[in-house]
Length: 229
Image 1 (cartoon, rainbow, N blue to C red):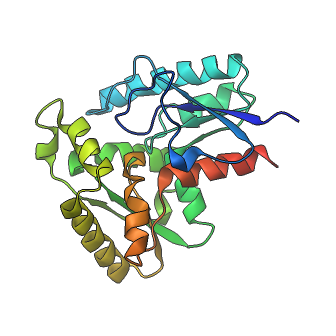
Image 2 (image 1 turned 90 degrees about the vertical axis):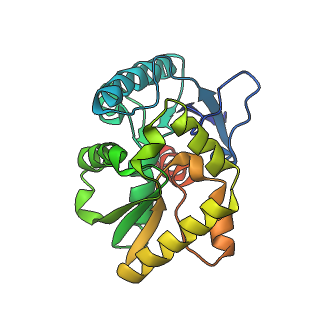
Image 3 (image 1 turned 120 degrees about the vertical axis):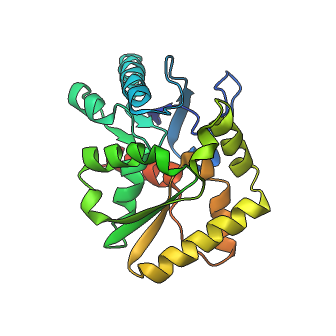
């Protein structure tokens, strides 16, 4: 029996997808043939209008992947861009890192909170994902680790992702403090990291005895499970 072929839309961070781009560790699953695919026309969504452009770009990329023979499609961003539209037009499973990770969180907790690299000005991305997935009622809070000055330059978001990927100790301490405060406020709330680019930090946080859900891997496991049932 051939391996299940899952098309992953986007690298999950600022890494460009080339022929030799390595599949991120959270997406390396035994028995799954994972293919990273670029999403032409998608740019970092700094505004709601940008998000709509991303929706269309991910929709087109997902349809193309399905037409090329993928058994499932994974939207490798917490924004879940185009997910609902893809589920309406595809006959194969499609899932996003955002709602997939939150569904995973709810298998072991009654509620969740999101701790994100991104500033309050980008709250619209989470609000849209929560509304589209009908999960908003389970969200205790969204904690933003940066302020809106992050968006002052076009390179700001890419630089921020690079800093997080490098696991800078100051950033790690700030995330640790934020998670501890969330745990104190909401003892029954699972903590979900708010960006797929934060995946290198998850094991470092666990070394500090902090329980977190890393969205790239958690959402992907949800999709893999769906393809096996």
